[in-house]
Length: 543
Image (cartoon, rainbow, N blue to C red; front, top):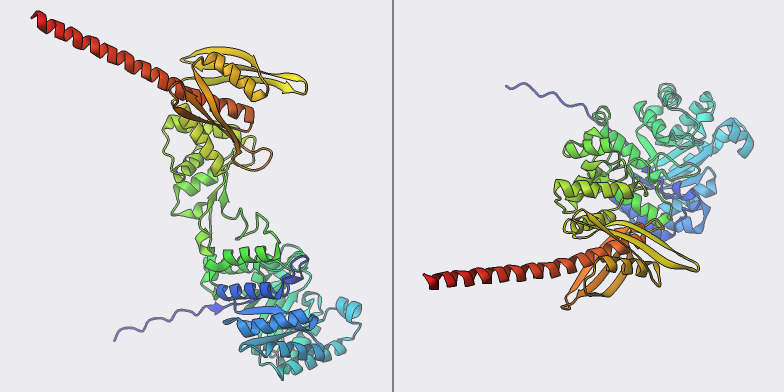
């Protein structure tokens, strides 16, 4: 008989408890209507969170209705309601939850000396009695009960153990250890979870949960320390939104456990990672609270590269992105990484983006476009695709230029008569002219006409902004007609609209010159062929 295969070690399932609709809504400006809460709750179900803490039913009629409707209408996750450890609050919360099939009642009570003395004004025994009676009352109405000793990280360890043991005995099957003020550091928070597991006699009867705030920027790190020391539920929010500095970010916890190999071998969640980005954007849209650009996982810059070294590494190893990306954007539902073009990006980044935009430039055209790109990038934080397209269009037009703008100087303003000095270059030789006009553009065009002395008329002149802002790249389009009536279009772009106007006009006139001179060349060639034909005929007659 073949040898039996060794069974693989079973991964520990980490329950994701999402409190976006409760704790995150306590963030100033993040209040949501009932319909908005329902919309977010349905998205959380698509994200496949295990538990949705839908609100605080005792706090207001609106929250009661929201929790009731979510419990009734949202399928998949367990729906949880938060309550104070007061019997009437417990009853009200249980009433809101009874509409659902899978529900949980979450009771909390302050346990630290600072809270007992400063807020509750009660003794340890009174606090213990309140917690036990509330859990018993909740358990008599709801099968699944969670208890949180608020400000647990500042609670005396012996008393924390006592209240955890008593509430488990009273019927709590989930014990949540909150770092309510975000005061703990990972080593001590992980050690607290480990000591509770080793000290509380009946702790094995309950799931240990962690709820960490980000006041010192350690919410995710503390949550991870809790997991590594035996916690199997993490309470978190989308975008890390929450009271004060926020909560542990759901997207960070889920992606960390999926990305780090040593963690992925030991732990798993039920989260549909591809719904992370959509969930983040939905919450942003509903609350109006923007996600900071450098936010891990879901920030605008999380998968953006601008440094030349980073961009080069990403481009060279596009299929092996780990050079500068440890998470693929597609993993969380984003389309792709972004290469942000700045003055630091380098030629390879510009060439790569141009190729993505469908431009196959020669080495000479690429180099010229890159130099124009640098001149623009030095004046702006970044260069957009539209601006890059405009630079390329300018460059492709310049490759067929006859006259090139070599120098431009304009004086105007107030009572000054607008005056333009223009120097154009053709075949290595320059010609200069000075002219005045009714405005700066008119003065420039009159000066150009003195150099490019060819019959034509201006049909149309249009100015548009390629991008927004006072430092926008402007694009000018002009249409001129030649002597035959044919219309030629010229375009020019620059951060200076007068320079863009000059470029567009010269480019349009180049087409007129090219057409006229091309016609002349054709006439000369035709005449030459005619003379040759006539000469051959004369030679044959003589023979």
